[in-house]
Image 1 (cartoon, rainbow, N blue to C red):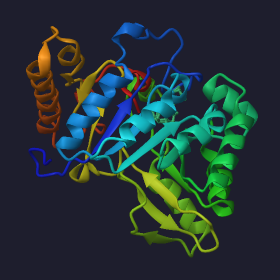
Image 2 (cartoon, protein in one colour; image 1 turned 180 degrees about the vertical axis):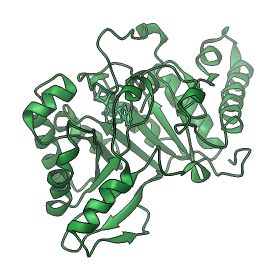
Image 3 (spheres, rainbow, N blue to C red; image 1 turned 60 degrees about the vertical axis):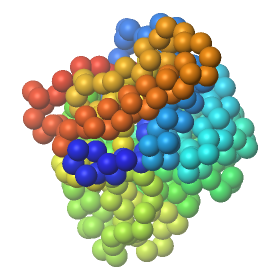
Length: 331
Ligand code: SAM
Ligand code: SF4
């Protein structure tokens, strides 16, 4: 389905929980108020939204959070969405702590690809950035995932004075393994506003100096706005998601579903369409009632697509109306 600016919207990011087993400082501050469990959509409710979305041409789904793997039954949800007739692809974004444990089940349920967020290869920095000693578990998960042959992307957010110098060490993951390492610019959402990120172009310049053979790779690697490069001798690719400095909104292809059942047209603005109210609205009996509910859910998805703004406003922070943390929205 096309939005008001003629963009084809075929992709939905679904936050299945606002809970997390890490406390990344730019995403989930201590003391954050979590949604009461009864406000979180059930898997059956998420499935209904996906079904409605797929009838409108949204065929690729990404499970995210919070940390999706802390919610019991996440692999089951992968299977539920994969089983819908319109689904082309179900992928997952995870911090990797529990990935090793659930990998086989995720693959058995049809997971198509996984993104693992990893900002550092230094144990102390990992603890400093996330509040936990989890680096070894994440590394083990990545190695296990490589062995399954699953498509893997490593997502890295670099911060000045914290992990910026690690770009080269992180890049080695793509040298040695058939996976993509992607550098994502810090977005001014929630605590991210207070952190100083690194511009994608700066990292690219460093890469060009170090690896003169680096060249653009125009092959499609995923559903997102990343630009990809190849370095001769590397098993995997290098990606840049320049969320702030690269203007990729003209190619935006997505809407988001928060764990509390809001359909969000854009990460940057508070605007949302409440789908939980529709899913849980007054019970309507019989097949006629079920049909009306399905139509109302479809209408909500349609509205979210129609209300997509032309562009985000990360370059004009005072215009950002989304006041929540990334973990509450779903990154
Ligand atoms: N817990 C999972 C994970 O860490 O991959 C999924 C949710 S997390 C919110 C998804 C992604 O958002 C992570 O790669 C994280 O680094 C990124 N993220 C969180 N806050 C961000 C911010 N302010 N700017 C840029 N990326 C951010
Ligand atoms: Fe949790 Fe992911 Fe946010 Fe880190 S980035 S706090 S792992 S949701």
